[in-house]
Image (cartoon, rainbow, N blue to C red; front, side, top):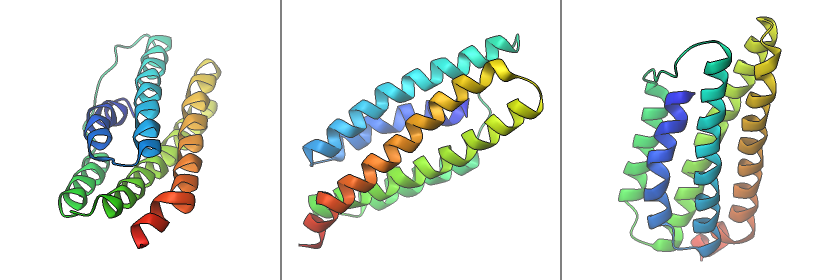
Length: 147
């Protein structure tokens, strides 16, 4: 997840630039700040283990980000692009939600209860972002794209 969150931190500025919907752009900006905090929480978790943070390549998130970039590069209509950006962002969120759920279960199983709160904070933010994206899509972005 350390690698994943760092990759997302690198990808979000491009998504912010591509978004034409002000609410979507603001949502991405907010999530960028949240993601930076999530990286710091993961660094705290490493410290709790007495380890230095280390990124390990994750082909899954690399593929998700690559697919999002390809899709975004193929869409000229800004309203449709906004809908595609929301869809791509939700794929990322769903991936993160599953991974944080797994990390929490592993931390609990291994008795690393001190880390659980940090991981749960990250999970709650990912779930909240996913809900915000759904609301944006249903209440504005998707209807505008369909028009």
